[in-house]
Image (cartoon, rainbow over all chains, first blue to last red; front, side, top):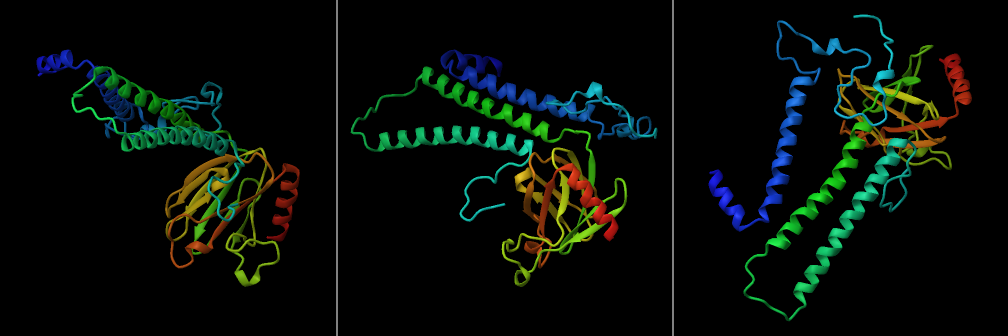
Length: 82
Length: 230
């Protein structure tokens, strides 16, 4: 399978950028989905040992992928303890 | 508010809406350039007498027309994702207002310090006074202070509604049994109109939203007045 692709690439090198972009896009999507599945506090995998992970967030936790203007390290906790 | 035969967005009244406007300008410019190029190529193809029956392939042009669109898409995607995350940021609100959708009016509750609330019905067309806008004006507007982060908690009493104010760049569904949160900062004083954006029955088009932004000092006068009257 890989040998066939390599032969085609040698004859048509213009396909290389295509592989790079499509492969990169698919990789980034899968990685983001994995991040959402494993790191998102709304997702619960283990109902017995970790039943409600959304209750374990601290005041300085940033669970979103990217923060534009917020400096999460400066936030203080202003709620009573659960 | 919207003007007759308006084509573009309404003027922005909040920083997020300004960002959305600039992003829209950026993306639309790219779209116009690409469309103009394609139209030119089509015209050139259709009006030429030159023909070449023996071209099979070309690696160079294939590389160019793979790399260039990918680059353009990245140039669109990066600002887009930045705005997406910007819209979701928690910004330590100074005030929380609750907006409840009913059939067919909105009610607003200000419960931070002292409890008061009021209903906001559309002014019927036959009761309009000169200068009021048909199907947009309401009897009691939602008043908020300018330049203060405001959180709005939106829910519904009966069926789905949606609380939308285009000039602030906000639309959030009002779902019965669920509390949705959105936040905004109004940059300048003024009156901003919106309409219910989820079909909710016979008078879905007749339950508008009006946000009035005034400086904080006047807002405190207004809330004291509302408290005394309720």
